[in-house]
Image: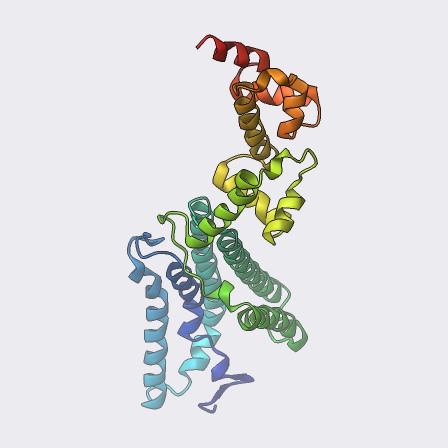
Length: 311
């Protein structure tokens, strides 16, 4: 039997140590995306290399046996023993376990991210990227189970199914890397204060809300502010929720209440009715004004006005 093949199977088709390094490489990619202060997923990272090292040493030993002439059928004998079959399952399960650890790491750090909306979107991409990798591993594992259960190991058509799946995933990553490289190469910091991009967005929001008093427009909506800021409604809502810990409606109403409070204690307040004051602050109706004011201050407008007079 020739050195370059084992029956119909070329030696090149036998799994090399790189298969044990796929998820490990992915782990280090994820790690490179976070700040240096972040702890590793595993305490002793060298453990992740042990399966690849063991398999690499085995292959080196087999090639030594083969090329020294001690046993020219070493690969055929190993193949007949079922080693390569079991190895397929072992490396897939190993990769799956590592990726589960990666997913848990990503999810646990998601809420700690500080930074812009775009930064959070990049982190979401990292999560999708990881989930897709897990799905591919699971499909490869199922492929092996089905192939061995129905003796389809040597079926070219069945093999091409998983080959196409793996190829689609690889080309998808390549497409993202080519068109959106900022998603693949983005370093995240968890312990930093709000970044410059956030500061700029916050300043622009406060410019329209505080300086321009856009909230006094009773029909002012999240879409209006998003248009002024040139960002999407979803991005704006997410930013306000993460920064101010409230919805857009509560955010706007808080400024309206502050406006009412100032008007109630102003020297000219006697000239206006409560309804006129509420409309001046941007409330669309007396009922909504009373409900929001009490929700924010714990008092009715009349009680607030009376308390201020008694001070």
